Length: 276
Image (spheres, helix red, strand yellow):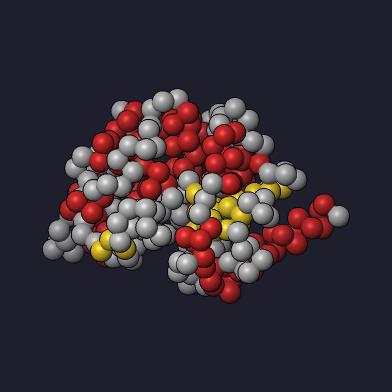
């Protein structure tokens, strides 16, 4: 699922927030005090919105090796994901300034969810989301050498169950995810942050109201939400018309802006045909 995993992590955060287990206004270091100094002043909501100010390259070998995605050479400063998040160094504009996409933000959020509940992320996803929504198949999530999950991009699931996640959102949460959380995802993002970021070329000018909120991209004017992952992964939701499209792919390029523009346009054309 790549970064569509983030969208799942965001939904789990919304569920726990509604149950009083996570305070979105608290510093992320309230839950994970070991986190690197670069997260000083960063709140849970900042992590949800990629609004931490941190400039970090997801392709960084030390990060990928610590998370179990690349072989360890032996000279990495950290050998585990949590070790990396505790020691990481990065440039930062400061929390609350603009939109800087860094997967470490969501991995740290996943660690905070575990700390807040005393449960592994896989357990939380299973108990709070996967089983209640009626998943057809088991999902799996990648972990590092000590069993810490990649909340930012580690899930694997069938395309039908990925579509079920989208359908849950389209149905207003069905009592599994709070309707208020889906409303927040849809309407409370800062579109200027996204428009002024490196993500802007990903979306056709038609989506001029797109914003990143709660680990989802939403365009409140078009009333659509997107879960997006590298190499061509998409989850697209139209709550008004109850239309969902899940797309898996194995593109050779992690990011191809032409194809990134095409997928949501195709979704909108399918929506036009189905609603005409």
